[in-house]
Image (cartoon, rainbow over the protein chains, first blue to last red):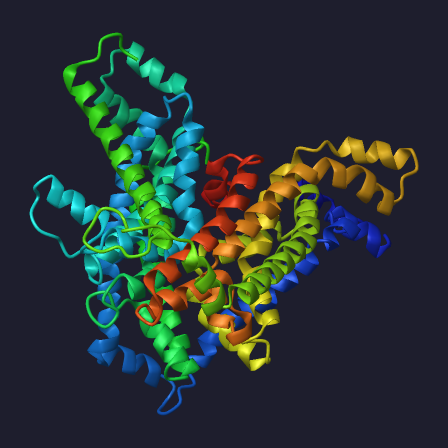
Length: 302
Length: 280
């Protein structure tokens, strides 16, 4: 439609402006989009640009002082490694385990009960999961008591360390990854698999040659969204982890710069570094996807 | 698909279901632990507390000023729901009905605040809000929470509006309906289920939105989830049961709305409806 409008744009100059604009489908109805666009521009785009520029106006030193400080102080630059060390395994576990489970669940008749239960941890959010796990995984919690009951040895330390944060990332991240995978898998036409089965393809071959190529697009997006979420872990890293040690993630460094040192320039610099790290990983995942599979992706739900 | 299932296939199925059940058992146990603790008198080195009581709810209500916190929460959530509907629905209508130049760019503009996590854009946003003296009070909290919810309403509503035949509107015009009449007597009734679903999801998301509220709230503008964070952060200052009583209040306020929302939408939509747009 847009192409058509553009080709007609050679209309004579004598036409009233209203008519010429209408050829581009710009009229009163189109204007309805403006309030929302202005809102996002003022409260999302502008703060981002402002933060980017602010990060080059440090409290002291030249324009790159914030970034130089970040990459020369191990207390600061180690947060990237600490965050990756949590985010990468959590993302891989959540997304990869979601595939076989979604493949099984799509055959289920009453899927809705399961999906409803899984929506609950997403809805409750990380703060409540942190408080719940502090009870549940604590040295006297039900989990450790069960371990001892079944003879797996003494209480295991599961909170206030790396494990606690990892478990909370799985608890909140797995349902998200699963529901996303499920929606992609149910979008694949089952007759494609039936055809392959009729031609004698074993389940493994059907998975490798039919499902995986169709799922590649969805999986790449799932990996990106799951990674971006786990990379910005904050409440559970503070409450369930060791915020001064193993789980001092990059969002804690940004928070401390903003609300403990009141250095909004440094905080913006750390936020920009965080965004840049997420961008790099997303770009890596998307380029790996095109390396892994090239071809029509339209057959999936997409 | 094949008539006979081999032993390994059956084993694989058992492993998968065991994983699912293990996960659900842990989620349920985690929530149950919070609920049981909030009603327990003393819980030490045992499977269950020594006795049960409801006094932690009374003490939580007083200690954490839950009355004030709940009022702030509902004021923030109400304003966010209303404003994101007012801003989002007309924008979705324009995007569903018109193919203007730059439409793809506008959709990308709405996708970004939903795809970029709140922590990343929250700090620059809070800086700007504090500089314009909007940070630390209710208006700042509402504005910050609107950043992901307005695009959410837009992206959820576009397919809803697209499925309404434009000829219905044209027919109303032919019979002499003005724009206002068209809006209130044709569009609103037809779009009501979609608007209701979108706004209920906004409601649930806003009650649980921690990061943006945390960055912009001052002492008098904390919502329930931020108050809960501070209580858990300062654990040891108050009794654990009292914190858990607050956690139960938080869970109830969230889950009641979630249950209502689930009557109108499929759970997978909560995650995927808008995200699926990203696949294009």
